[in-house]
Length: 279
Image 1: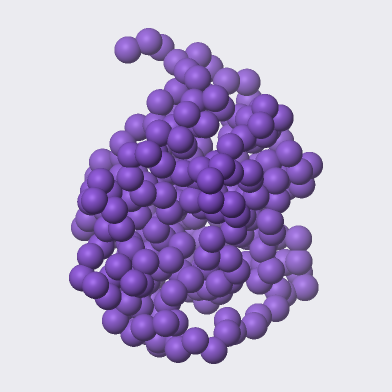
Image 2: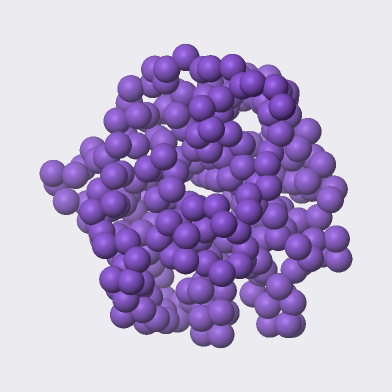
């Protein structure tokens, strides 16, 4: 195995400082007490009635976690970047606010990779990249963002054709890096909630038909990661699964909520945010 070259020290001070602010998460009792809090509060199933409203404390106005969704161009199906919006973003933000000591922006953001505001936020989300097309400025911007301390979560794409498209785009960003399959033993599956499997989360329609997968060539969920030269995880790629549906559709059916939202989508989503912000 070739030795990885060392990166220059990250120089995006706004991004690093924003990430450090999220260490407030660690102030919670990680483990049993944290899980008890989940059991007491998230088992309160909410039928569709809109997301509860909340306000950021004045002293934390500039020290908040913001759900940043990336807008991109795509071939074939248009608007893949906006799938599950806005409910998934709102619901996940609300659960973070509810279940952690983190102050969470209730509004979130939609940004393009070339937006100068990108470097104000340490965590970004790309959904349905099976048809995603990045132009060269976006490739350069994403590479710079990730190498300088940013974290990317990729979610909700299924099967080999969509994987090939996404793989081709991410190899333009990092020609010298390959996404690595994460073992179940990796800390990201255990840092807050202790998961005993790599969860596969389907849409509510597939779940109600008794299937956890959405395509014949997508029966096994994959969680792959990109690492920098210091072995810091820069991105987690959630393939053959859909955490966004688990967030968006939590209020549509109690069975779906209990089996997929509560047990899988929210625990793993919170694990990902905590891991990303503390490593």
